[in-house]
Length: 112
Image (cartoon, rainbow, N blue to C red; front, side, top):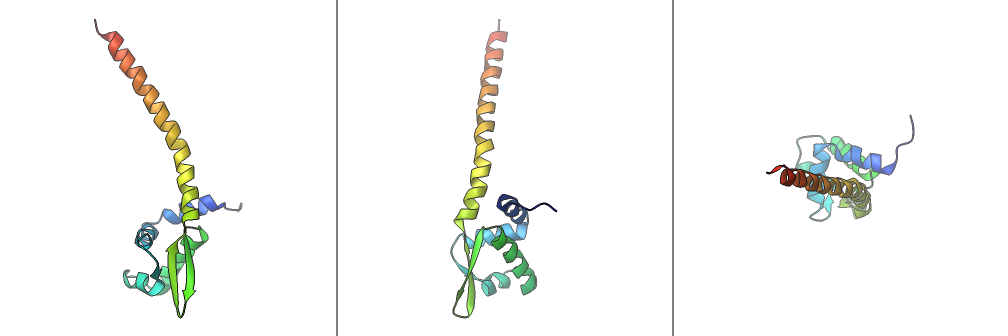
């Protein structure tokens, strides 16, 4: 199997709805693993697997604080995803604008 790049890991991690909800929860600030696990009807090991996927993808970080493990959003990982999405978005927007101009010109020239 070919090596997987960080961007692919990020998109793979973000493809899961549970992980997206976890990430949304973390945007409000650090949360302990126990607090996150309490919000889901799944085992703590299952939550840990989701957190591992997000951490490997570089979109969250986990730190030890006393006996707790806190999770936070890692902006660096999210910025790479955002940057990748923005490049084609700018191109698509430009192409749609050009298409709209062409269609408007054709509609204007079709009138008697």
